Image 1 (tube, one colour):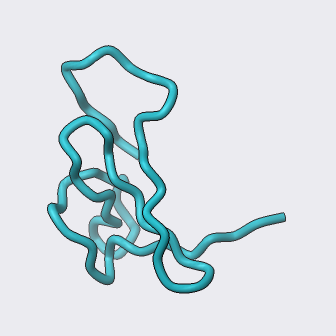
Image 2: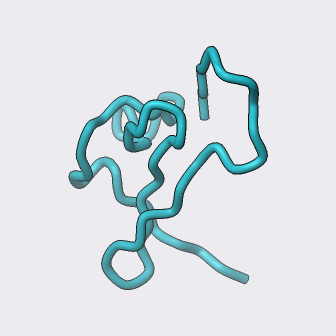
Image 3: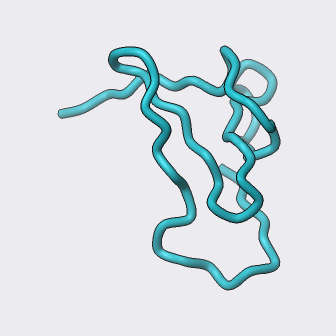
Length: 63
């Protein structure tokens, strides 16, 4: 994931946004943009979207 900010890096720079079962979305605390999977996930993840759509939802894998 590529994260760019002029603010000092913090411990919690992403906010978990609960979605449907077993899926999550991430919102950058700096700027408030949602993380998206550019180019179908082939490129870096970037926080560049203002809303949550299909490319801004990720499967939550545990264990």
